[in-house]
Amino acid sequence: MDNATMSTHPVDISKLTPEQRLRLLEELWENLNRDPSFVPLTEAQRQELDRRLDDLESDDLAGIPWDEILAKIRGRGR
Image (cartoon, rainbow, N blue to C red):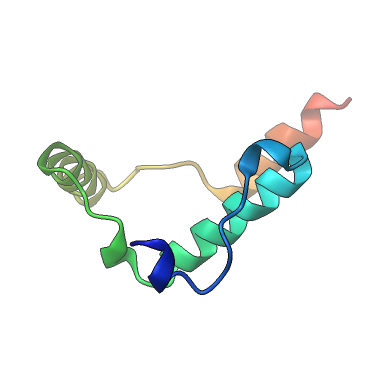
């Protein structure tokens, strides 16, 4: 994408505060997240996601119930 197609002026990131850079990053991610096809996967990433999905589908006991996790978190402060 060249500057002619951008709807805003270019930003000099080095002049932004850390908070401003984080907000810019969040805005960029939100924009990309609207259409995941803008973020292509490599073949290795696609294979890893497929492997993880297969693992989840084959393991009926995958994961920890939310109540159990919450109890563990709350128990740490005591």
